[in-house]
Length: 109
Image 1 (cartoon, one colour):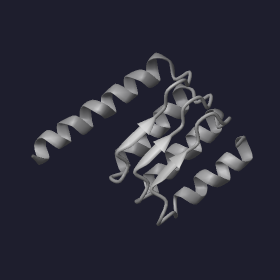
Image 2 (cartoon, helix red, strand yellow; image 1 turned 90 degrees about the horizontal axis):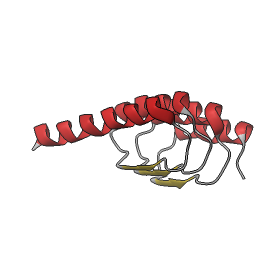
Image 3 (tube, helix red, strand yellow; image 1 turned 45 degrees about the vertical axis):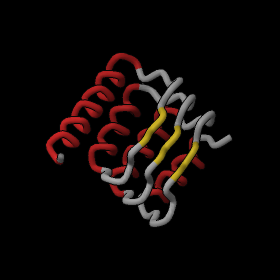
Image 4 (cartoon, one colour; image 1 turned 90 degrees about the vertical axis):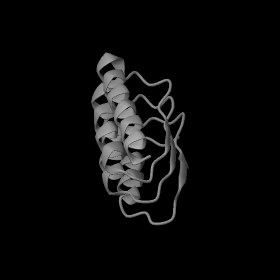
């Protein structure tokens, strides 16, 4: 199981990753701090296409950071954040991101 210190190191390495396209971190213990580190790394990552982080204890604050990272990341096409206590605030942030991405895809076509 990946916990806080290892999660933060892994997420920092994602910032400079140039080959990894699929990452399944489901059922670990990233928690709030690991989720925030993940969101920050998504802003710089250019290759990750699929990210699974189900059941990691990611809360609303971490979800907001992950959403901000998604907005900056043009490569990511799929994320599974199921089973995390993201709360109403995190759910709203995800809905805004989904709406924004759908709008961009309509404009591009």
